[in-house]
Image (cartoon, rainbow, N blue to C red):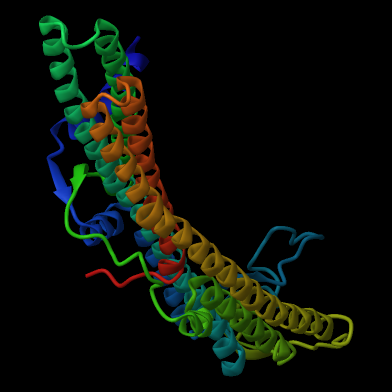
Length: 415
């Protein structure tokens, strides 16, 4: 029971935050700012970068010296067994040992950590671009869901007015009761569309809350100019090198090259120096200095093979970068082609289909007033016009999504 209470208490601050969150409208730029402040991915990535830089600085330093102390040449047999003062060779020894690693090797190791820091830092661009795409899609989803709801409510107002006219006509005997029923059925069908639109708005609000930590109830500001590409097609294709994925792959290739440069100097021997002082019972004290040097006797079987493997990884990373650039170019070409296709559909819907549907409603309204067409035909035309307007909002939303997929391949700078 205590566990359940503790679990419930741990979730209470989040619930209070959600219920107390201020509701407000926001622009797309404000959503970007809130998303960047809310995410934990960017601060975590920055901490990793700082850690690699710290390791790079540490790698330039010599290893810590070692303190050595103990007893040397103690007897283990005979009458002096376990006695440290009977044998003249038994020595109490203390000394300092320092290992000297080649400055070249230390610099190459530091270069590797710095390269890892740059590769990790490049990941920030990937995170920011992804967050901005997700935030833009959620903001557009809310904006167009609001637009769709407005379109539906306009139609509801018009048909409700028609319903009142029909009810008055039935009362005066000028209209059929069945016409009133048809209008009411149409009204209820459209109210279902209204409920669906409200549900879409709530889903978009929930997604924005997840991304920003703020209770955004509506959008404000103007839409970006989604009716044209963010830049000229040639400029977009030439800017492939600026894409975060390409930048990170480039940093990974640099890292692989730096690792191969480090392994190339791995055979440089390290030198150890030991200075000691020894005290003996009833005899003169002694001192000394000792040197140790690495002997890479089997370099071809060890260091050379490691270096060869690092060189091959560097070549592989360079090939991966070339492949990624090619894939990014193909992906961008496909995104641009999809954008043009969606734009054509949206323009046709807005400039051809919707004007025809409005003309049809106007024509049938005139014919209905003249008695040459029935109420069912007019209601069907109004319903068809509403569907066309909803389809127009959907195609405009699809255009915004296609535009977003291109615009936020490279992250936008957010103040």
